[in-house]
Length: 525
Ligand SMILES: Nc1nc2c(c(=O)[nH]1)N[C@H]1C(S)=C(S)[C@@H](COP(=O)(O)O)O[C@H]1N2
Ligand SMILES: [Mo]
Image 1 (cartoon, rainbow, N blue to C red):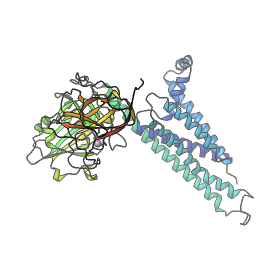
Image 2: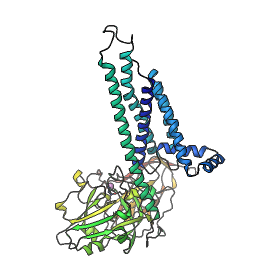
Image 3: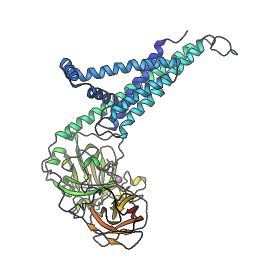
Image 4: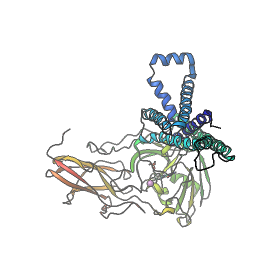
């Protein structure tokens, strides 16, 4: 008995749809963006002449998109089945079919607005799934054919295979098909649930109106006016992102609650509506990550709007002996924040908006904590849902369990933005610039040194408070050729940024940012 052509096309179909399901799931988990198949549909719509699209919409009405998706699915099904059939003769033939399909998917994904390399991941994972599943499913079919084909058997062995072999390979094929189908259904469903939740919350976020939240207006004089220096205000979509969430929590504001408990006189339970009905506080605060290496870019400056934590904690009535607040995120991440930082006069807040808009989901929507002067890992809890007033002696938090320091005050630091490492500058009159920060204390001066020479003062931009970074700029006058440039800052207490080189673990890197550059007679442009 030979295997039927049917089994081979079923293998192709099942492997094909498993790949689509996996790519869909990965796309939903990764981003809000459409799955590759949907991107292809959008690409087809974009490439179709306008009048044809209009006619189709005229005939199909709201059904134009489902019908197009269905047509693409049917075409894919035919190609998948064909790939399965081809596999019977030439193992490499389906690889070509899949490669072409993946290429089409990849191009469609990349042609979307704002697409990045990461958007190719669903396509790549889908392609890998096709190859693995197809070989899994066709392997028993191949064995079956070899076992049952006369003459194919090893001449040294008895001519006819044992009676169980054909049954055995068929059973293997059926079991594997079942497993692949079940896996695809599960992953497809997971993708759907994740994707729907995210879209729903995106919609809720878009419709929010936050009273008292104003547009970010950078104060006068913050910019030093050197081209290439990091913008003083970091747009939300350029703001660094650090979290441990594989799937970002998507919380409908109507479902959000914050519980303040532990060593307090009265537990506080707060809904989102109650939170945004309170008095809004707003501040420019520069947030940075303890894992930021010297010269790194895990730092950003934004206009945050929210509710002061000092007031909320006062209402709860903090009991004597407490020195910490254990914050918990909706995704289970925790951090321990010094109580004093949440109750003194700094603008420690439950932030609901970033740069005048509701927080982006990735940055903690609907509510996160912002505490000026502390690294994010001990303070800036995104998707915060619980605050327990407690003692450091009694708690451990996510990163402190993993070797990072319990306390995480931001260290004095400075960075060269212009020129970039290895860049060119005009030897005489060329401008160099960057940023420096010492949140809570403020920067009093920034100095640069060329080739380890004497330190020279840079000019500083203005700042609205001690809690933001400051831009600096200086003018060079050096011989043409290769040089190094180093920068160091001093805080408002007169403490100088240390040149001692230390790693980010356990409480933040130190050392002077130093780059190489080439001084030229003239730089074009
Ligand atoms: N829920 C949650 N909040 C978190 C984290 C996290 O992993 N999960 N990471 C923290 C760290 S280490 C930093 S530096 C900041 C980064 O905030 P951002 O992603 O908005 O820039 O968030 C903090 N809040
Ligand atoms: Mo961080």
